[in-house]
Image (cartoon, rainbow, N blue to C red):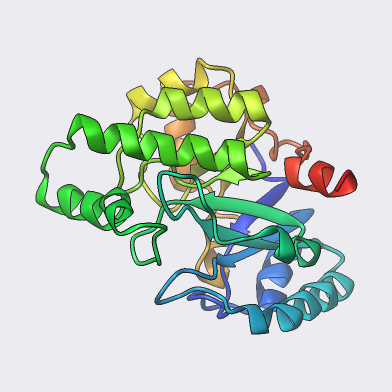
Length: 256
């Protein structure tokens, strides 16, 4: 298994260590054809990119692509801000971006106060080893599925990292709307049993590094070990072995 593209990397525009150019240079050295620069979304309280920084991000990505020959996609790891599926990348932002990732994070401005439980509340339950309630699972599942239905998401990132959703239901929603599920090489987010059940839905996967430092760009070791343990068919992963995905966001932008 070799990586064709790494669509989830961070830079100092959020809390990554390597610059856009350094991440692209690392990708080029590894023979990776495409890379996504996907810093945290605008509503992240601690680490989110700010809208006033977007022109600089776009310029850095275009210059890095020209310097390295690697396709550098201007992306974002948007925040799912509540059960409504609201994300913090809005249609007015779309023209500046090539790649639309989204996930649930803890320290964000939530849509409603009650939505804090899907992020902050779930994180505390994870740390204290408290079993999630049925209502928490239901609300978190709704948040993921509504985000996929409401927004032209390319990728759902690290499903169920420090939160609790019905993974199979989310995978079926992604499958039906053309959104990829990420297998993260940074975070343990689905158990082997959950990943096997998710794969059985036929959802398409991307495997990404979620690199926050230059040396981790293209590093798939953790994800590859799980893929091999579970027996995920490699043909179900669309950014390895020379394959490149068809992204929903790009198709959406062609027609809107």
